[in-house]
View 1 (tube, one colour):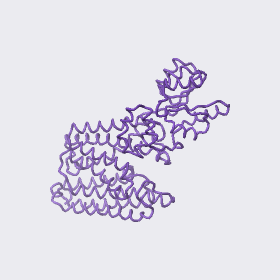
View 2: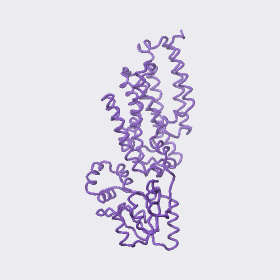
View 3: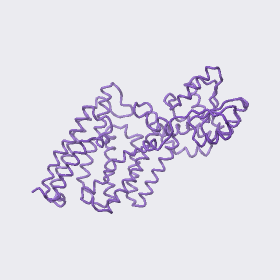
View 4: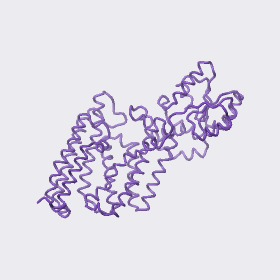
Length: 457
């Protein structure tokens, strides 16, 4: 619950994070009380161990006395006990005493002697288990259980699903790294993809952006714990479901972030600045910017654009205003598509856009903005075909005009599928799974190849 409270603080009062180190210096009990007094926690949505809860209810039915004895703060422990409804008493940290380990054992022996059965999960509980009549473990690690069995013969265990690398992979959102392919776009556009040195540099950038984005995804999951647990699909995310401990998230997020920044620093200060900008903008989006209508879509578009800019920075390929303008309007269109899909779902289900700056009446306008952005990206692309740079890169630049209707077909199709309710997730994720997108990409690559070789007069 300490980390649960810390996650809520990130969401509800992020400006108080700077005070956490000072609260730590005053002791664990003070830290827990300060956190608990500054956040609100929905105890109904917490990930309980259901088999253990049902066993406790069965024990209560046999008229056994049940005590909730926890190192969590009293102001958090009491609502949990009230919600479950079967505890006779609550003993918890009170802002002065941190009820953990030996301190908890002393209180238990004062209250109950040695005739009690204790359920716990951590290394700090080992000393308590050694002095109780019977031991119960709940989601305890294998090392803790092994140490316990050396001193206690009879141990009852209530273990949830074992944490696996699959859970960590889901938390890191490895599949989302595919978005970093945008880093290679400058190389492709400049016809320098075959240069090994530049390809290695782009791959390096791909990895550091992936590490940075994974840090951001983990932080986002910690901030949105309560909302995710109330969502029919997002409730299965590793941290929201309890498959991964929150402590792992608070450890992994800064570790991944500083690893990516450190690796980027070895390359160039410019890449560090780009990564820092990307992370700060992503964090701002998670905490605040996504609540502001229109600003949220510009923010999403910029986050994708930063990947292309990073591709220019690490390879030294000259910046193309045309490429950046085209990409900006394309990603702006996809961002509006994401918001339109959410608004349309709210309209059809009579729901609400909680935490967003939009209302159902904005549905038509958002659709118009998205479609207009799509056509603007097409216009920018067609204007680019008239530039001298195209004549330098392609033997028969006229052949590139065939790309315009192909691209226009693709972007219009995305919007038609959106209006039909077929795009029910992040449009960029949908695009990466869409077979037609890969066919269109292959066709565009073939047209560019023909224009490069000059086989079409």
